[in-house]
Length: 285
Image (tube, rainbow, N blue to C red; front, side, top):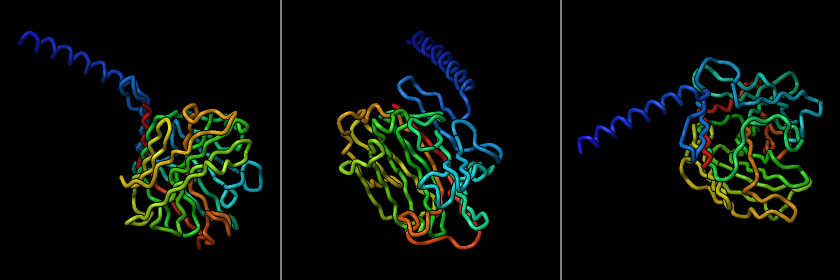
């Protein structure tokens, strides 16, 4: 028995050394795990400045085709996405002359071309995403985290999973939406939404979680279930849900006047209005 314990102790020491060596070689923000899972975690440590890999920031000049449809209320500016030096990622919206500029960062750059040409990381089902964040307090803004198919053409069809789609004039309401588009046309039978009343406002930190399985997606806030989506069967000619790779986007926009996103409001003053992310974690099983 004592010899067995000695062998086990030696083996444990060797394994510990291997794990520490792997950890030393891992890129910042990537946590080594067993072969069954790949985990991404970013708590935005380090000095103030632009976020590093895998984050890509969108810079879209107002009045150009780079500022597509939903961005037009506040075309995103690259300088509006930054680490604050206190372990947070800030996505800022602000007034810029007579216009607003917003913020978008993610693992791909949204240009409405599919699949996107600029992307870093993506995940297939099953995976889980958790984000701790607080939203802006001024009415008329549109904050959140959402996912899009990044390995499919528009003709084949694209899933859009709006994990956190918050309208800041409703400070105690969480919204989730999901859609499927084929040939750029929404397949209405596959629309999904859930809504959850919050006990504290969006300006407080909340834990947003999405669990993606092969045939369902569940959404929760602060460990309270918002709902589970199961209508994931795609139309003929489209790629099954399980084969879609999803990229992540974080956004802070001012909604266009009169739009659903704005709720009929516009923020007053010059801002800034910040969405602050404490951490993002994604586990691929």
